[in-house]
View 1 (cartoon, rainbow, N blue to C red):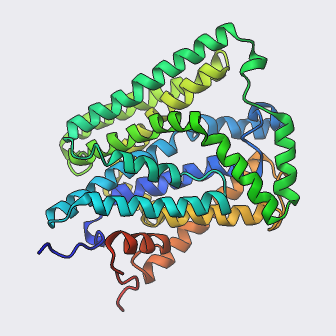
View 2 (view 1 turned 60 degrees about the vertical axis):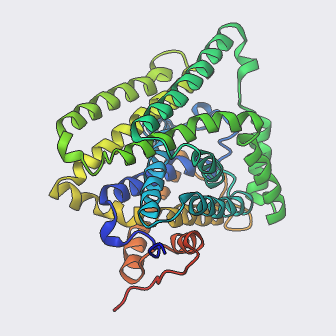
Length: 395
């Protein structure tokens, strides 16, 4: 009879993982905020905002946050799944059933989130790609790292080269992804539409980034990161950080410099479909890796650990905070809420995101003094383990 399988206990959590999750939730929010208040799917952000302040804020987010924090969260997702898998196996359970339940619950939550709250949902993709990734988790840590890196680099490098050939021989007007007419019409729906009209637009926008072609691109840019994170977890790289701090510091510097250089290419060189693809698909993950190493190194020091503690509170209930951001922002900007869609500047939206995140730090801290898990995390754990863990802290 296997030992009863329970959620990871507080004393067994890896603090730096929660700090990274909290940091990722901030970065993801800064990027998502643009889509909460503006039709980012259809517009050219370099031309949509006029003021130098808005352009500067956009450039900062584009360079340091865009396409960096979803990869960071993906790496952490893979790392966390392996921790759960190893705990299940150590107690005599098959992880196939537990992992499948976990991802199916996430899929259900993602469908509700994507179609009823916000089109920019990532949970559906994480759930589907997580189910596929289950096929790889039996591999060794080294094999997972190599497989993930190859699955990421080779297809995306080929895709980037195809885009480079395209921009060399096809006029810009035929390769542009921007559509001013759709930007204006979707803005009108989100600002003044009914819930039903907004839901229809939301589904249209969701399909824009989740169609058959996009699915392949997303699969090859997200699932390999799960595998890399899973490989790092099997090798216990975070737990063994003290053994190679100097090498980690060098890796941080190299990844950050290389990532920043690639992210700057559209600003210091030609700005086209190919350079933007390389910027996001290669520069973004390199910065993500550098952020992860930076936080791991800081978390390994007393001062750094204290400094990053607020990120831990947000990170321990990261999915609840992610959903909270969507609910609050759609109520602020959509027609069935306050209807401020399109009325806020790039800088104003960023300031609002920072303000909401600071509130989430406080709210997360207060919640965790009374409860062991975030509300969504508790529901997710209950469905995963087919038992209801106590959520309240004992007095």
